[in-house]
Length: 249
Image (cartoon, rainbow, N blue to C red; front, side, top):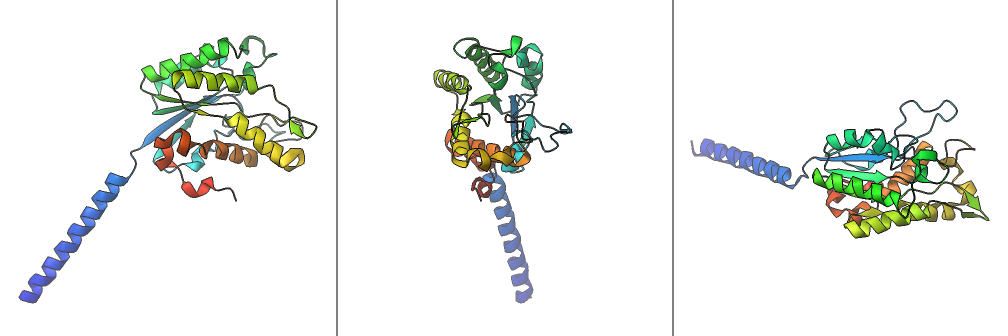
């Protein structure tokens, strides 16, 4: 009988310890988080890419690969949209209605001169639209994060030539004024392409003539540039990152 009682006590003790460990693990686990992305073609998802660029991939399309299953990534970025047209077409209203926890905002490519009624002025209207996104997101209890537009792969004398820096600077300015996190993807992408050079980054593009969009390899690297800034720029999202993936092979 004493031996039987001992076994029962031992079994109950083990069961209790397992239950406590399970509860501790659940308490330590990060609660589910929802991240929504808005932007242009460089961020968009291509389920049916163009036939002449079958590998075309937006960095937002694979951004979720850097996160654990506790994070749900929804990509509303759309080809050809600027900070103004995304709102005018009603896309922002639909995105806002989803009420995610975090919002990544990247515009600039289609805000540039020559884009017709889509273009904005980095010193005025571009900032006004950014402020609208920020203010309306916050009113819906969504935390906005600005991402400056990555550079196109255009080189002059072996170095990147870009017209997007004014839009990146406008984002940094608005971010500072509004106390919003800003990931300067433009600066990071310029540095990366200058390091790799034209030939070294050639396979980042979906075709020889397309120097704006990305192949899957290019999208993976651009998304990595954004993800590796999260621990310092948006530290509360760090627990949701797959840490090993942040180390470049």
